[in-house]
Image 1 (cartoon, rainbow, N blue to C red):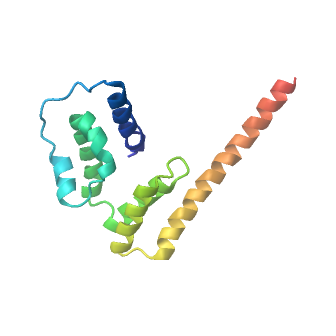
Image 2 (tube, helix red, strand yellow):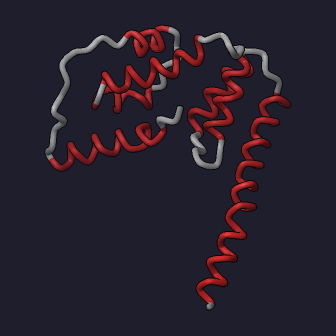
Amino acid sequence: MSIHSCSLGAPILLDEAKAAGVAAAGHPPVATPACDRMRSMGQWNTAWDPFFELDPLWTEQVMAAGAAIYASGVFSAKEMELLSIAFDASYTHMYAPGTRRHIRSALAAGATVEEVFAILKICVAMGAETLNLAIPLLAEAGSDAAG
């Protein structure tokens, strides 16, 4: 799941709100067992703290959904980390902290350098596929504009 828009935007929102003298409304205390479990397992990313601060219930729901995928047992820990590398390293994300974290975890789970690099190569192929789809559309738009 992609929460990087919040990883990017929430700290900026908090900084700009503080600079403008605007405070968030605040939230009543809520139970956050998925977030708490992730913290205790060392799986919490501190980049998530700002949006947890803004909306702990929403953050809990997002994390619980993601944790369910990890806990399902359908994929091994290594496979989950390789998939996570693909998400974070993809050209639509290019999220370096997550990519590093998941590469570290994939290697710890037994992935080889070659397996990780194969995943990164798939990310390159995704970008090339986008170009293959976009170029004919641009050519068509250009010929339509030319009359």
